[in-house]
Amino acid sequence: MFDGHYVEWRLKRVRALVENYGADWFRGRRVLELACGYGDIGASLWTLGADVTFLEGRAEHIDVLRKRMPMLPSNRTIVGNMEDGLKGVGLADSYDLIIHFGVLYHLQDWKTSLNDCLSMSRFLALETEVCDSDDPDFEFQRTETGYDQAVSGVGTRPSADRIEREIREGGMILSRVSDNRCNANIHVYDWPVMNTGEIAHGRRRMWFCGQDRVAP
Image 1 (spheres, rainbow, N blue to C red):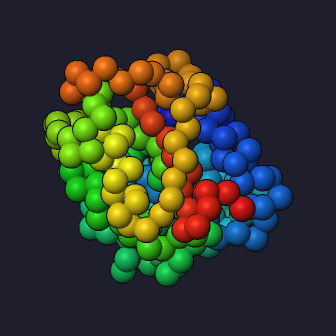
Image 2: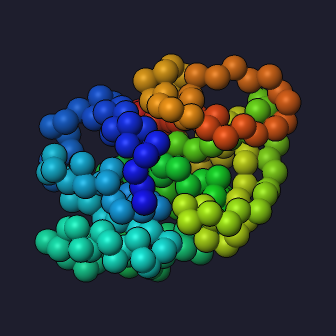
């Protein structure tokens, strides 16, 4: 299910994670992958020695993950709706790194889980589709029905600047990935803002965030 255009894109994002934090850093680190799908990204970090917890909104995806990685304890594979927040669903109180990739724009309420991430992690890697605007107050919602889209049926496309405002207000500093290192197929990160207020599938932004620095 998460193949095709996902494959190269996923590999490039994993490479960006390893380049930012360093391969050796992951050993023994507590990592949370949100909206993990089949857990491919977290599994890559698990091979580097990370203690990875996987959270996913669809139980059928977690079922596949559990079959792929039967060695994982049950408390490392959790079904949960991010719009309900991340606290009280069986997660740890804190993580060295939270991976928040490809899901913010599939949330009707994206701020609740993002702010939980900001308070629960030392580092945050965030990636999402955004709208074509640099207005720090701009966002809009749309209906979604795909298997890899909103669990609630409604997603939100904020501007990158709106997201950055939320991160800073939540107490983290950030570094935006503005080059083409994660460009793959339809997914593009170095596109120029034209302030049309519209969305185009695949126009994305990515950030490395942290409490006092964005990398170890």
